Image 1 (cartoon, rainbow, N blue to C red):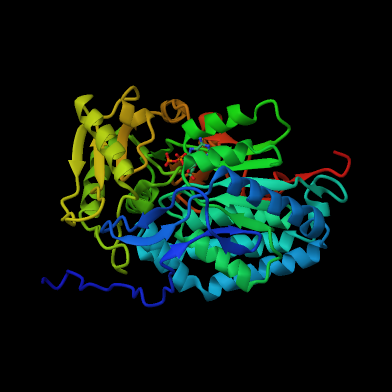
Image 2 (tube, rainbow, N blue to C red; image 1 turned 180 degrees about the vertical axis):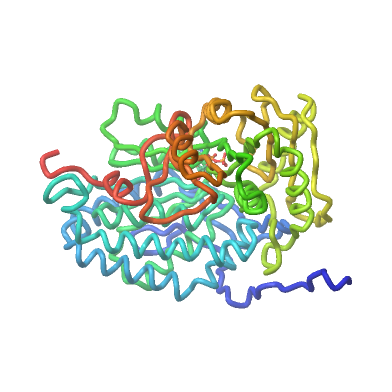
Length: 480
Ligand code: ADP
């Protein structure tokens, strides 16, 4: 081993206290599911982790009924101050069990432990702390005095940030006095089920949060349930469309957080090394399984070659492998299906004439893996410039003037996020103002904060999560 190589430094799994099988969490208890059970596996080596119950239509009914009872009899009647106490308690328990949650998340999702440990789980705790603070201050949410909860929220989350998306959904809903039926993604249910144990530990009243596991069809049944008042969904644009159609004509409220194809714009006056770190963080964080990923690099023509050289050098130092190893930068792709999609789209990229470069790293024999890849010479009409790959794949385009950068950045059906790298504050503000994206980062990328609203334009969805805006998505004015 050369002195520059790292010895393995795996995080121990001994902290986990997993069950062999998990039921559905309904009305405060784990119960058997009436549907077909399935196994959740580790994408790093395809080994089974636990058997997971599948919810039948009757189970969905039971979960919604439990949430309705808890809403009408307990949670919406409780003072905001008391609801806040429960949320603070949950936040503190997440912190106490942080290491266990991080290990479980990396095991089930495939993301590097340094990300689940240093990004996902701390953000989960901060989301609960933040909304705990709102629970007794709803009068100041901007809806007048005494705003009311909506009722039962159906929440459907994806597999890329399983526990963090759960926190984004559950924390504001509970602060505002709603109760919840949440369905995690079928490939990553583990941390949601450990979270259910945390709710028991926190003595949260039965039925306030119900967690039901199952396939997409379980989600489809849940959003269509007549006693659901609010649907909150994060996932693909296709499913988002299906949900929008399913609830059209009903009085259900909805927020949809869908796909993205963000432009990360690097001007010639940007600090290049810092920008290269930001590009890497923008698209290779979480294997690119990030809806707001900076998957389109727009680089000013005069610095293109320099940026690409430095980027390739930097990517050659990334370590791909065991998600539980503390030195791992790039973990596993979450599922065989996602790996197949990434392969398909990158093959199209080559066929369309873009130039492909892939970091030279050893790929483990078992599991789902994809090495960091860059396409240069990409044109705006190429599919790798238009479709969301949702993997560690960067498409590079060039521009000459700020106006061209803005036009290219906005030339997408999506509008979730964007990044700008420049030394000049005035240029950053002028460009940011013209970008059709819900979040614009300047000289940084993929930064999240519970007080900051997040959401999209166009096919990236509607509604905002986070901050006061995220809270009002779960409230109605006293007279409504
Ligand atoms: P991806 O394509 O990234 O896997 P999906 O949008 O398919 O993401 O999945 C996100 C979540 O939506 C998952 O929990 C999944 O089970 C759920 N889901 C899939 N299809 C539907 C549907 N028709 N209605 C409601 N939820 C669905």
